[in-house]
Amino acid sequence: MSKKFPELDANQRKFIEEQHIFFVGTAASEGQVNISPKGMDSLRVLGPNRIVWMNLTGSGNETAGHLLEANRMTLMWCSFTTRPLILRTYGTAHTFHVGDEGWDELASLFPVHRSARQIYDLKVDLVQTSCGYAVPFMDYHSDRDTMQKWVDGKSDDDIRAYWVEKNQQTIDGKPTRPAD
Image (cartoon, rainbow, N blue to C red; front, side):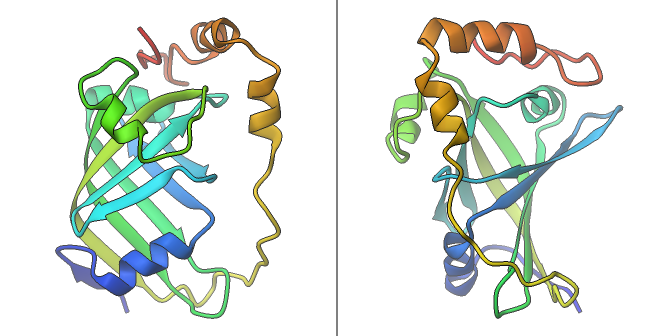
């Protein structure tokens, strides 16, 4: 049975901080719904109704495009270990890009990463938990180093050129504003 809460409590915050992966869901008013897995050291819970996460370069940029049209966002975590639990946070998100007022303050919460495209600041208005009884057990081995190796092989100009080539539009052809 699912339960709803107006904010994250201490146990829920601890659960989030223990997870190695989270999923982000967004959608524009029309077109495809996007759900993306996220990892690395890219998420911080700043309060009972506030979560920020740093979005790193990827093959797509759906979240950015969707939030330009509809700033709704859902984050989800699920336990793959002993305690069966699925936790979702629903709310509205504000996007920060390099150079925006507030970027430096939020970026200082994370390890420096040259391929950071955006930071999303989620105002949580609903928390929902559910059982997770059907989620399989899986063991965490380690983070992948693939992203860091890719970044290490690129200059800052190469990364920005990749954004121009691959991250300007959603799969539905909507703009994303990956960088100015």
